[in-house]
Length: 552
Image (cartoon, rainbow, N blue to C red):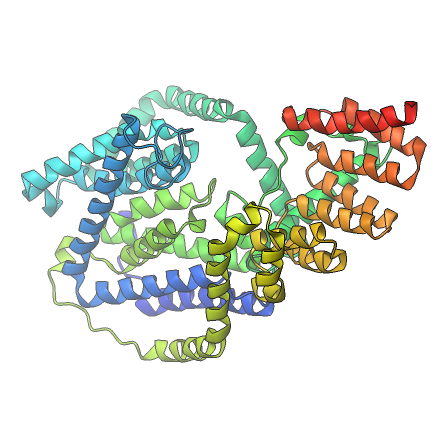
């Protein structure tokens, strides 16, 4: 048991240097890739971590209760938000989901519930907690925790439920008053418990089997990327481009090795083909860090999590249960892509390491020396000073795009080109701006400029539409073989879409290759897309009209 371990605490210096090394590796990676947007979240997380750590060391009791109060206030707000949605009073974000809080999606909402309920549930069940002295506060907390637990299944988030279960197991194993009874029950009914866990796991998998299969396939592609670039990674912000390339190679190799022609989609496992999709996230934060920053970055992140949880357990604080829930949730979702969870991670990690038990907190606050942080602070300040004009310009362009996006949606492509095309090098991380400008240039007949813009997009996004529009550029320039390669690339990236095949059919019609046109037209007729819709039928009708032209 962890109580038998030495209570010698991991020092402030060791954890701070570990966090600083992770932060600096991310900054260096972003700088080498010429991407200053990707490290913004890491800078924010690093600052929150150090501020929380310093506050915990200098004002332990005040910071402890302030963090609990802020977490409780946030939990209370999300509880009220969720209850309004359950009773169909507030559905401003999306009517597709029953409950999603302020997160606009039930998955992250379920993850938040599992984190905060793990923390306050541990406080409620802890017999020695000082917060139990206030019956009013204790009753309020218990009521809110029960309400949030009732809403957790409504989110239908399997990863959030699993995260909460893991946090509960840690509490049962570590809590001295409960673990004896738990171990006794485990010895008596271990077979039934094992069978129950297996059945629950199978049920969670089968409940949303296509979604689970899609994520497992994503993990397989991510591991193949890490295998190719294990140390350096592909660069912060370039996950989408690397994922699209890897998935394209995977399906292309399968077709070329087993198919009768270059587009024989029937040789692909239909289950995998149907769940495949473009993705700019791994749905596993550790894998995504491994893809972008290499194995060392992923290991540093895991080490920080594990060390923080162990230190919190040794000090008998409740933060470890929330951090464990967040760590497990990050295995199957994308919490670090959201500001809420980035702040939560930084605060929980710092609280796990630098908060102390009730007995230790009553002692005199520890003295804190920040001398060893001076080199990092100076280096960081110098870096920001040099890059600040570029960062400020980048932020202004992003805000301008948000304000002017309506012109693109309304079809005023000249305005989009005039406002943004000259600033594309500064916006090379923003896939939405890149696609909008590239497509606008294509529709205005500026095909070479469109190609140069869309090439940026293929580096940061796995959306095959970039390659489809680039194929249209090649077709307009009379480069038929280049257009063919680009349409095929789009098909290999996501081989359950009909659109690239119709573009190939139009290409052969334009080129005057009747035999290949009829072959491709037949493939369009028999192809099974992921979803049949009015749009897929419209695409088939267009090819039928071209076939009718030949018959006439």
